[in-house]
Length: 294
Length: 238
Ligand SMILES: Nc1ncnc2c1ncn2[C@@H]1O[C@H](COP(=O)(O)OP(=O)(O)O)[C@@H](O)[C@H]1O
Ligand SMILES: [Mg+2]
Image (tube, rainbow over all chains, first blue to last red):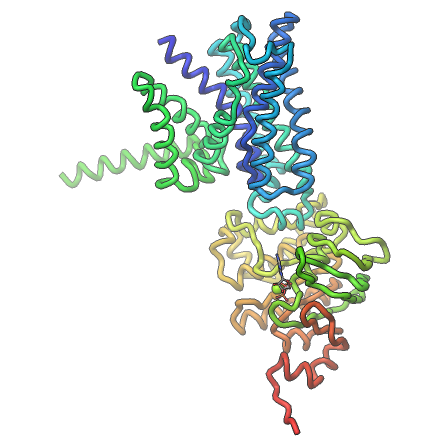
């Protein structure tokens, strides 16, 4: 049972990072292969504050978010200003992610590659759920705001959006900062869940998984990526016994999604109560229709 | 109103516009005719602020030209691009509202929505339909209407008749004249030279990146070189 609850907590934490990234990737059309670095920055900032300075957990989390947000400006300013093409941007973020990891491995306060053990266990399941729900709610409002509509326009046709008077750089920068802050929050929670962090936990493999979850979930949806995160974490966990099959399962999910749902699990739609109700109605109608035939 | 002097625009090594000059007076319809690849779209993108001229000067309303696309839009320079570039996954109305993105005057937006629906009654019927599912003619109307929702001072229309049936084409040109009659300056790029020259106050002929002829619409319509190259009229040679 503890184990299942643990998996749920990890799903909640990764959901936070993924939903933030969904705003950036899904709503500007740019792919990042470096968002693990923002998780790392949030994780280390928060952990160093609680571990060495006994800072209150919530303040440490906020500091981690702010630090991630500030550093995302350093990444975003040159890359977004230059309007790098999507593939160049992805490569730039990949380099950025690796650079951050190398820096963390060589700093003394992070204790280098050995990592930080003995971080306090503040991230209980209710805490993880609380922040996941909070971020989902904020993001939903963010997307349905006028700003969110612009972001969609930017993804669909950046040039046309610009000609409508949208400042591309500003929209992209704000989405990047938002996604970095979400990743920073996820990192802070992660550190205080595992009680131990190490730079190798935040490699491009994690970045790729975050971006894959966004793509697999549907580029214009926030509930889609949540389902994708749950699948990506839960299915390999279920196969934990057959350890070597975990990565295969992960790949298989991606391939199946690409074949059967090329626009992602949810496409441009959201999973809402209305949709669930319609689905149930549809199923029950199918059943009664079936009975009549018999 | 809009003055361009000796601009040069490149795509990498390709020299797409060569020492090009153009002068657009307020309230007029100015037409640019040119064959495929002449540089009409390049000129339009440059005026919209998406492409940059390497040399030459550009002014708008006597002031330095806005440096990028979103500031050009804010100043009232609005492009309806070739092939429309609508938001296929947004409805007609949402597309129109994107045009009004910079505006805060809700009353004015409502009035303009009324106005574009009266120009294109079919769009009112299609208001909640996804733009991607419209016919070519309806998409063109939506694109023009979206441009109008920005309250342009000058509307740049890049091949609005491209891919339209003759009936739609006639309707689009009629509407362009109506829009102009309401006070909006128009720059029109067309391969469909006859119609475009007929409604033009002044016109230019663009060939491989150079302006080779200019005059009033009537003058160019009766110019033998234009007739031969763009209107399909054959002149007897000695
Ligand atoms: N994105 C581009 N990259 C390189 N060359 C281009 C590009 N767009 C247009 N060109 C070239 O510039 C010239 C002018 O093209 P364009 O402005 O599209 O002409 P038109 O609109 O009159 O058909 C052509 O020779 C075309 O091949
Ligand atoms: Mg063209």
